[in-house]
Amino acid sequence: MAFVTVRDATVVNRNGKGGTIVETYIRNGEEAKSYYKVWTDEPLPEGKFDVSGILSVRVSEYEGNVRAEVHINKPRFKVGEDSQAVYRGSQSWSNPGVSALDDSPF
Image 1: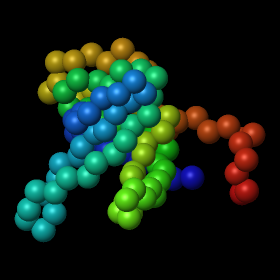
Image 2 (image 1 turned 45 degrees about the vertical axis):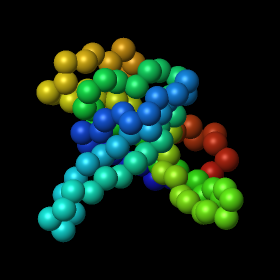
Image 3 (image 1 turned 90 degrees about the horizontal axis):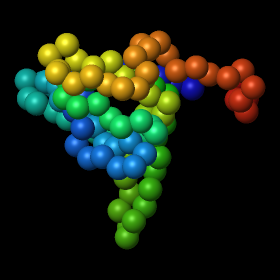
């Protein structure tokens, strides 16, 4: 199981179970963006925020086009210091809990 932390993310798209966020950074002197789908029952925060959670990648095919989507499950949010928003969900900044009773082979 892998964990991921995304810093200074902003929401690109919202839906009933989370949404899509974008992380913007500099790579080789140029601006680059990484997109992630975040799954949660709570509304996503406003403004800039950090998110940490369980990483998963799903490969899908539609009309001959194959793409990989990066997902963050069981997210924990930390609202950015420069944001005026207050997130109503969990303010915990620890890794998501993992049950020892899951079906992991290790």
